[in-house]
Length: 418
Image (cartoon, rainbow, N blue to C red):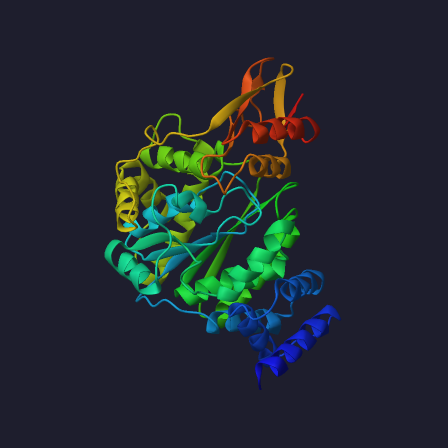
């Protein structure tokens, strides 16, 4: 089949999906192959994304799309148990992954963490890690890093893993949405290609989360578990009712500081972030210990590794292996940006945080494209605030963006204070 005939066939496949019809593996493979090799225009790719959002995928389509995404890209190869953690996303300022990785790796399991850049939040794990070290490597270099230090925190972009997914993400980003089924395919394809054997999913739910209702989270998790079995991956979930970011910083550098504070066990570290990371790490360790026939308790091990400084030491090894500066600390990492302090207009109690508005304002300030832009939250739900007290600090490279954020905050508040 020549290129012209293939394109006609792929267009018919997209039309078929727009009409709500099921696709065969051959149709799906051709579509993914065209997208992966950038032979399909962004307009046609957008039509496919829209059709997928409206109609979703059947169980077989989920498997076929995942398989096709994997087979049209590169794959990594590791021996033994390969652990991983993935968040469904939508929650800003909760960079637990960068704490989980060194804990799990310190326990003796490989954890090649391959992340996308931000889609619906002001920073992805790769964006935050890039503040501290390089994140772009060839597959062979990444394998070398993991085989030497046990893990990595890298970006998928230059690995050639599930390349169609990165192109689809590019067309989704302006709209800031993904369908649940597309999220499942996207995540699972990367983990299959990375050689994952054990995976924990973080599924935050709440009024301003990507997943709002527990029944939807349970449905998504059920599909993940079922799909994981077809690829030989053991999947467990961590469904949590979430009302606010676990950290204080929103934006790459600000979130990196939160991560370092937890690993360094600083007194002013964000405890919600530490608690979330320990919960995820312990459950993932329990899953791995069971199959490795190791009689250890995940939570006690995770706590010991974090509190003893083992996790920090391992994190620095990963940073060094990825070409970063191991001397950077939460104190020495400075925010090189202009700032503005937002004051409370009246005395009261923080009753709620609107994460949608928080995401939007952080993006207006320049995150994640500028590492130092973002928002620092001085208060959490339940905290008392006094009139004229600083409750939020904006960071941006230009006062124009700060002014725009100030005006937006008036109409779309981050805090509900009563």
